Every structure is written in structure tokens, then in C-alpha cells.
Image (cartoon, rainbow, N blue to C red; front, top):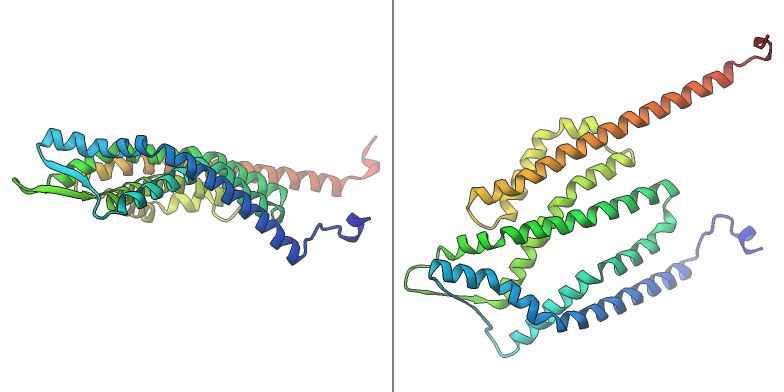
Length: 270
């Protein structure tokens, strides 16, 4: 009876608010639990973050140390790193809660595209972040190289961690951009030919991302980021062209079937 009264399964504003509150509560609880786990993992993570500085300082014979500037700065950093770890390890949970809240507004086909985008973009983001971490010691080495001889480089711990997180996020998001192009093509917003024709502004944008993501003046680091981005860009263009071709064949087949059904006459059968 309720389905007959509401065939479109529409929800009232109060229902949306209750649903949003439920999703937010579950996400907050998951992030809180992840933050508690991140609190326990702080020593290991912070030791890994310090390794590039320690290694580069020893190799370049530079006096560089991570410093806490106030009494509460160590606690603040501990909490920030724990929260970041919790946000990262619980990302499948709160991302699913966001998806579960907005999914009823999508059609079945659109849901399939967004699920595919999530499955592809997650390893791309993680791969980009790992690639940034692989290049990170080179960034530290180049930046510490500006330290004058006979002086010490006292590094603020909070600024260093935020700098590291920013670099990893930029690298991760940069690797997700080609997946966004494929998603726009899948929903019919952008054609493969348009992606391919826009290679000049795409190369400029990739160069800009490479310059912003690599916080040093070393051009090799910038090119190391640009190469996979260019490969992903042309790969996304190829996938979009193949998708357009498959869509055109499907539309032509549907049109042919419709013509045959329209022109069919019973007397044609002998």
C-alpha cells in the first residue's frame, strides 16, 4: 500500500535529514575509531616521515632536525597525524556513506558509472601518492641543499608534516584526473575527439600541475610526474574513442532494427 502511495519512492525533507544524520553519525564514528588507531600508529608513521630528512642530512653532511616550537606543538602534531591516518584508513567507510546517501538520486546506468569510477580512481590515487612518496626524498635533498655551509636547518614539525601531506595529495589527485575524463565521456558530456583535440591545453595543464606538485626547481622531478600523466591522458582519450565507437555501433544497430520493424509487411512472406 505504501508503494502505491509513493510509486517514485520519494522521500520527504525530514526523511532526507534523518538519512543524512544517520550517514554522518556512521562516518564520524568510523573516523573517530580510525583516529584512535592512528594515535597508536603515530610513532611508526612519524619515524617514516623523518627518514628522508635523516638520510639526506647524513648524505649531504647537513645539520637538519625536526623541531617542536612549543609545549603543546607535539600534542597538536600527534593529533593531526592520527586524524589524517584515521581519515585515510576509514576512507572506504565514509565514502560509502556519501555514496549511499546520493545513490537513490541516480539512475541505474549512472550508478554503474560512478561505482566503476570509484573502483578505478582509488588505486590511481594511491599509486599517485606512492609515486609522490618515492620522489619525496629528492625534494627534501634539493630543498636542504640551499642550507648555507656552517648553519643548521631547524624544521618545524607541523609545517613539515603538512608539506608532506600536501605533496602526496597533489600527486594522488593528479593521477585521478584522467579517470574523470573517462567518466565525463561515459555519461556523454565529453567525446573522445574533444579530449584528443584538447591535447595542447592538456599538456599545458599537466606542465602546470608538474610545476606546482614538485616544490623544487629540479626539472627532472617535474618531468617524472608529467610522463605518467601524459600517458594516462592519451590512454583516457583512447578509452573514450573506443567507447564512442561502441556507442555509435549500438545506436546504428538500434536504428536498423527500428527501420526493419517499421518497414515489415506480412505479404512480404511468401
